Image (cartoon, rainbow, N blue to C red; front, side, top):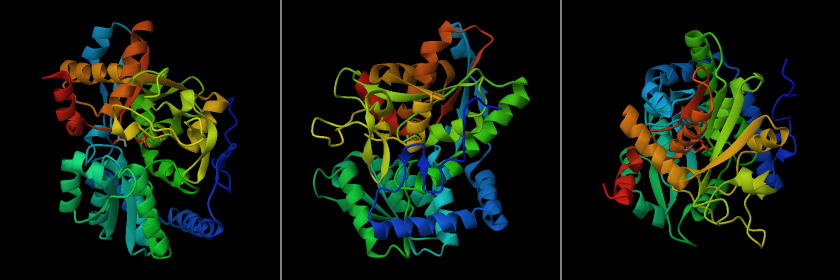
Length: 400
Ligand SMILES: *Cc1c(COP(=O)(O)O)cnc(C)c1O
C-alpha cells in the first residue's frame, strides 16, 4: 500500500485535488461531457483497445526499449543512467502515442474533422500522421511567425495531407493559433473534435491524454523489473504541459520507494523572466479551461515564457502535475538552457544519441545527480524525442 492516497484521478468532475475541472462556458461543458462519455464507453470496447494496441506495436514500433547508457554513467562516476527510448517511435517522439489515441477516438465517435493548433509543429506533425493513418481530415492552425521558423515540420504536415491554416492575427504565434483553431472548432463541435497536444485543457483531456501516454510507464516498469529484478531509485522526465512525464510516472505512483522527478525549463535562470518553470515559480491559477499552476505577470496575465526547447515553453502545466506537486509525490526540479545544451552535446558524443532539446532537460538533471549517488543505484530517464529537429539550431548556436 502506498502512503499516498490516490483516489481515482481525476474525479467525475475532472478534478485532481483542487486542480483541473472545466472552466469553460456551459455550451462547451456539454460538448466536453459528451466526449468524456464517449471516451469512457469506447475505451472499454475490445475492438478499440485491440486496434490501438496493434498500432502501437506494428506502426509506432512499441515497446520502445530501455537502453543502459553505460559510457555516460561511467564518465559521471555515480548512479547508472537508463533511457526509455521514446525517440525511437515512428515520428520520433512520444506525441504519436496520444495522437493515435485521439484520432482513433475521433473515428469511433464518427467525427468528420480533427482540429488542433501547433507551435513548433511537433504536435501538428504527429496528429497529421495519425489522421492520415486513420483516414480522417485534419486541420492544423499555426502562427505565420512559427510557419516561417519551422520549415521541415510545415513541409511534413503538407505532405501528410493535413490542411494547414496560417494565422496572422496578434503576434501570429501559438496563442493566436489556439484562438483561431478554437473558433473553427466551435462552428460545428458535434462533428469536429479538438485534439489537445498535452495533458492540459478542460476535462476530459488531461485524463485521456494521460491514459494514452501511460503505455510508456507500463512498459518501462515491467522492462526494468525483467532486466534488474527491482525498480529504479529514480525516474525522471521533462515537463512542458506534462504528457511524456505523466505517461512515465503513472505506473510508478504507488511505488513509494521510487523517487519521481519532473524537470522544468529554467531557461536563462529562475531569477530572470526568461524561463518556463511553471511548477517551480508559478502559483495556482487558471488557463485554457483548467485550474493549475500558472506563471503570471504583474497584471495576472499568462507570462511570456522562454525555453531553448520550444516544446516546453508553456505558462501553465497539467492539473495532475499541480496536484502531485502539492501532495509531495513528485519532486519538480529545473535545468537551464545552458545545462540542456551541455546534456544535448554530451549524450550525442558519449552515446551517439542526439536527443530532442526537450528531452535533454531530463538528461541534464540525471547528469547533475548521478555523481552524487552510489554506482549501484539506477536513474531511468524518459528520452521523449529525438533531436533531428534541433540539430541545425544547436550547430548554429555553438558554431559547429
Ligand atoms: C512536445 C514535446 C515535449 C513536451 O510536451 P509534454 O506534454 O510536456 O511531454 C517533450 N519532449 C518532446 C520530444 C516533445 O516533442
